[in-house]
Amino acid sequence: MSSTFDRRSFLTHSAATVGGVAMAGTVVDGMLASVAGATVGVSKAKPRNGGTLTVGTLSDVPNYHVFNGSQGKMDASGFCVANALYDPLFVMSANGKVALPMLALSARPNANYTVWTIKLRQGVTFTNGDPFNADIVVANYNAANADVTVGLAIKPIIASVTKIDNYTVAYNMVIPFSAFPISLAETQICYMAHPSSFSPSFTGTPVGTGPFEVVSWQVGVESKFKKNPNYWRVDAHGRSLPYLDGINFKTIVDPASRNQALQSGSVDMILQQDGTQINALKKMGGVSVLTDIAAPRDPSINCLIVNTTGTMNQYFAWAGEFASVGVPGALPYILKGQAVPTAVQEAVYLGTTGAVDPSTGQWNTKLKPVLNDVSIRKACAMAINRATYRKVIDGGEGLVADGLYRKTSPLYENPHYPVYNPKAAKKLVDAYKKKNGVSKVSFVIDIVSGSSTSQKVFSFLQQQFGAIGITVTSRADVQSTLINNVIYGTYDCSQWNQFGGVDPSVNYVWFLSQPATTSPAAGGLGLTALPAGTFIAGAVNFAHQGDPVVEGSMLKALASRPGTAAQKGAWAKVNTQFGKDIPYLWLDTLVNAWAARSNVQNWAYGTAADGTTRCLSPDGGSARWDQIWKK
Image (cartoon, rainbow, N blue to C red; front, top):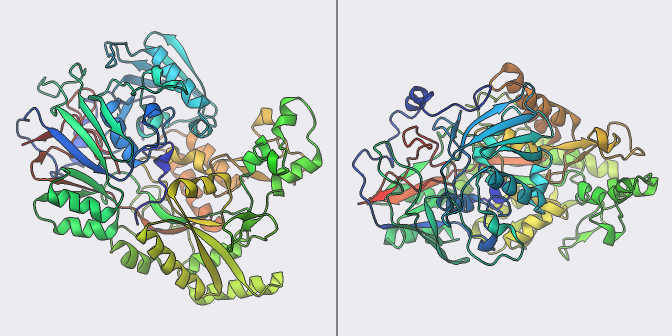
């Protein structure tokens, strides 16, 4: 199933070595061993300079003027474009274990991983001639921190970025974060943009240090880039990069149309995430295809995200975002040093309880939710035949999912996610009806309007849930509206795709929750009238899973030395707890397939700053472009 929402749609691409980041050349042997035999899309021939590559992407950005890592809302296609325009601070090694230098040279932590000192590369300039330096990194952080969405995702992690000298900065963390360099390679804040685009009124074209620069951009149609003639990188033989004269990104939303464009030659290369179309690609003549089935990163998961509290976003309620609907929020009182009235605290916690009205499609606080009961979530999990889903919906591509990690992951332990058992599921539903004195259990599933795949998924689920006595209705919205419904919590359940990556640390903010009764100074929310032990989900924990076991395990993992048993055990515990809480109804893993016409060479190859040490490319749904060439 092609994703309805990818975690990268506002932050992430997606273990670093202990004590910092491995320098180029120190891990070459291990990486070469890990990619031995991986020759699809890799050419050893002498590259030919020139030509323009046209890439068919899944989507485009709504506003290219502020397309940057600090303000952009990047999905897989956004990362593709960013790799043309910008350079990241780091890139991941081909085996997904080490962050390698790009604009940054090294990263060194203090003893408890609360401060990361980053040395920066000298002599790099933006395409407008301005230098890259520490001031640029600080400005990029400040813009991200101030952004209304990106800021929500980084504030729980990064407290500040300070300049030490012209080419050294310190990332000061909110919590110990031992794997932080991975975030500077795998999340959108890795890209360093010229600060000119950070103004809300900016109407020009964004400027980077990357291999290409903007020529034109027709949003939703096509963006065109030309070679940066002063790009700072060279390949292993000292040849200037990039090899291409230009690269164009053509937006082709429909998966079948994307395949047709590749076959006809109107594009040279595409990304495909639809299982049926991936199968068709494999049979297409004159193209080479590479999937990420065996990639060194856990895949994103196709799932249903569930509103586990049956409320609107409780963190937003705490912050006063819902004052217009009678929930004034606790934060305004806290900021004034005033006691938060008990009625306000209770309104934050339960004042927006409700459900989507199936007849109007609107959030209705007079309706009683059902998915806030874990027995109903468990029944739903047992109702879905995930093996059949994989076959019918995704054409047999990907793997059946039972949690965050695939079974080959070193982090995987059986999470005991509920197995397919419709008879047991129906008993749970019947018990819920009897306990609550109701004759019907129903909820609404959000789907993407105009998507035949999304409708097919809903029809499959409707049949599965109907068999256990649950009635579901679809609410079809454009993708941006669907995402906003989930962000604000005005949803019951939604088709979703998220998580995965080279390291689970990049997913911390999506699962974060805070102790409700603890004071804000101690990391809580100051809601002293609520029951002791209550946790409330963070701003971007969209399933509203407030679980102290999950939060404690993640904090232990993030504070542990990378690669240790303590770190691995803590991340495994997170997955096991998900099997109990069931905030997501897992389906199968998302497969990214890249395909290129035969005249496109070296398209599955990229290197770190030295031009020699191989990096991870393609990296899920994105790729690097500077070492691709055309016959």
